Image: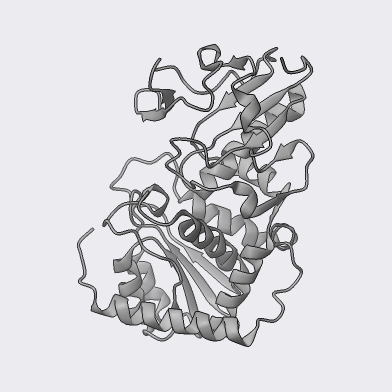
Length: 330
């Protein structure tokens, strides 16, 4: 049996990048208080969001925060766990979102997949499998990690495609709807130079290119095959591609000389005025010291000519492909 001094907190965050970081931050607060090591596992059985090893993209600067579970996975089913009914099946249970609980539950028992954050547990392994936002926890997580070279290199290539100082826009228009059209029409006369648009919606991209000019608006993300589905929820998309897009986009939004984002539509019920992703980019944009620490470099540096040429070619092909795709109502 494992040594009694083992005190692990297995964090399996769900939903998009901001929720993931928020849940990691929540686990870190608990771990700091009750002497636990947080292990982030995003590629567990049944994962529907992110679906890849978090350590591929990020490095931890905190010994209490481990971003890859691969050295620990074989231990999980040998540890006494909480919730207690998951002991012996941490690696095999299936979680599902239940609206009545507003979070994830075990399919077999209908029990919430988490614990009381005010209680100090004796079990060697705690499980936290949940979604939810909160910028206070996002900031805590971001201050303890930075992106890896694979992300740095891709951001530098995308930045080089734009070629100089730019303005950034974020428009979310899938599961959450953003009131953006009237403001875009106003900004048409305020913004000069190239524009980077981070969006999950083809129509938003088409609208911005129509009003700002096709060649001024840059977008690098791969859109989901199904209209209206958030990118992080489309399991048919390649996980590495969608994850890189989400991470690179938030960095590029924050790297712009000016950053614009828009309130969520008042026609839908939301607990917040803005998308959490918009607010995450704003956090990095306003705090340049945090931005540099998170990105891991003090400047973007150079880009190899071959990488730049290949990226520009992919970008041109994508633009041509999108121009021939039919528009859909969302």
